[in-house]
Length: 147
Image (cartoon, rainbow, N blue to C red; front, top):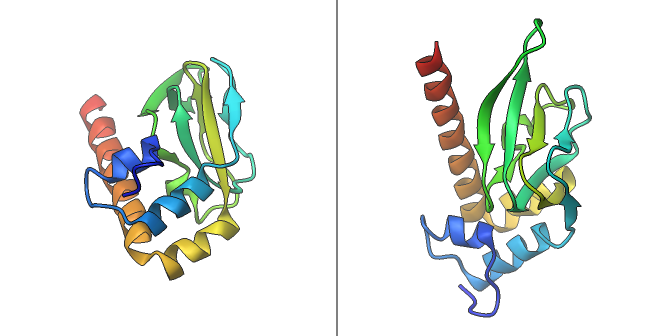
């Protein structure tokens, strides 16, 4: 891993494997488009078009599901270095809401940019897919323990 570049996503993924300089450069590309978000602001709303994934660079965000009686339930907490939207990559519309819990920065990465991830960086693509799957397992476990 390059000493000159360190990101929260690189730090998180490096817990699983040693990343190459090329993989770190691809992650830098994923994180280059930074958008500040204020506490309480919605990042994704139900029904929004899903354009790709987002790296949470700083701050905390939560996935919320709204019930018909007006209440909402927190389904997932995102921390810096986590990728939001992996579970929805095959869908054109969001079925939940992501809200910032603190001020932070998100880095949207378009769906079209994911093709090189799997063709040129298959190990990195497999790692992100695996981490996303682990997140879904944790979500299901959390939801079942609440029931």
